[in-house]
Length: 222
Image 1 (cartoon, rainbow, N blue to C red):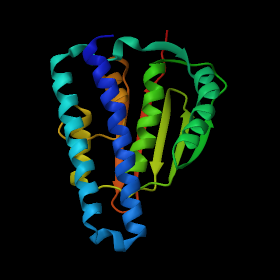
Image 2 (image 1 turned 90 degrees about the vertical axis):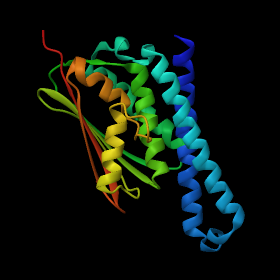
Image 3 (image 1 turned 60 degrees about the vertical axis):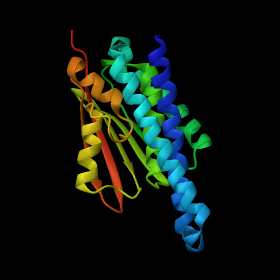
């Protein structure tokens, strides 16, 4: 792994934790109105925003200078049932231990064995990204449904955070496709798999209520 790619991964994780800190601090202010006028609270908010901006600038600098940051070469042909039945519950249980959020997980499989091109390492990062970004949006609950259809795998992630306006959602989608000016919502891995393996992803959001991410992953057919 190149030095640039190491920096990108480390910076991405730092950015996730910055998002959690910002979301937690926002909840603190909402629950304690008297703090909103405190000069130190204002300084903390500005400091977190500046740290986030610097993180984005650093990521863009290294991504522009290193095309090897793409991870699609690490996709492997994997049994869908075996992977998700074995890994999903332990992974989300662990995330609930780490983060202050309730995750309602539902896994629906079919009997017919199916395989798909997946990136196991990036799936770990994908789960944590979606959880940390939901928390940053003020969410306390995340509903996750992994469902096997006859021809593709569907992943649906819905949080109860503050949601986004259409303008904010458009900017987020633009970032996922390489704009780099605003923070996404943790689904870059899905976007990277779209062109080569037929992945698709959609976003919807209700301002003040929730955000939903829906991904489709086609099965591999001989």
